[in-house]
Length: 117
Image 1 (cartoon, helix red, strand yellow):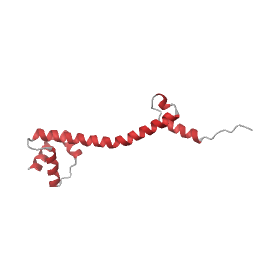
Image 2: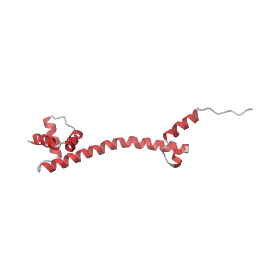
Image 3: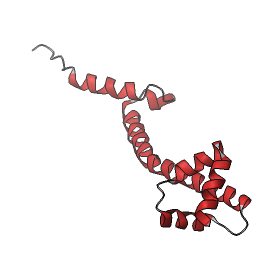
Image 4: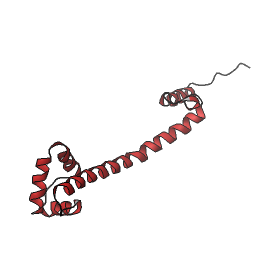
């Protein structure tokens, strides 16, 4: 009986996985089992850290806004600014306020003084 040559499907699957892990170091890019484990770990970390990244950016925006507000006025804080924003029904989110703080402080001061009074 002659030898049966195996199909190409498993080999194609492994090469696809190897392409994903081609930038990994050591056995993580050479051995199939460790490549699969590292792929699972990498995809899980990417999924988890997408939310974490959004959370960190929001914290950064809040910190920037709060620092400038406390520097400008003595009796105002971040929470009162946001509360008054909602009362006046201004559609400025934290990202845009933080960009105003960096790019144009005078405009931000005008907005905050108008909202507080």
